[in-house]
Image 1 (cartoon, rainbow, N blue to C red):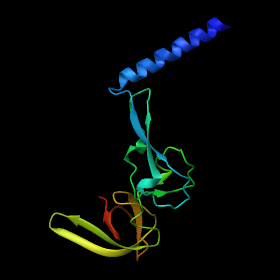
Image 2: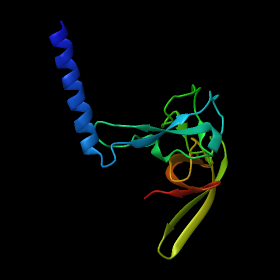
Image 3: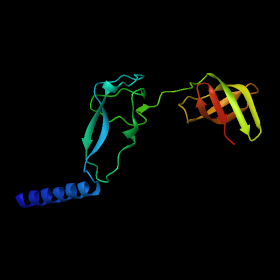
Length: 150
């Protein structure tokens, strides 16, 4: 039984050593919740705690770009990794918002009013309904502005 445990520990130490060898520093920082967060809470710098971790492939999780101003999309417990979709950039447009829909080509730009069907932040795709009930897909360009995709 002890030989089996020694073999297991040796294999574990080899894995840890190879994981550190893949990352130059052997350590990466990931954001974790410093306290319990409720759904809809806007993150402040005090809500984000950075923890050192060693990842086997040397990569960082998508959570590495979390910043103050992001919003909790669900209840998050203290110590939980902050990553999408649990936290997300704040919405610039919400469903039902009146938006300017812009279509532009070289030399021509058309601007009409529409209603957002979905929600999202700058750079996200969203559907917009025009007055004639036509649906268009666009990219959120800013507050109440959507650029139509070709």
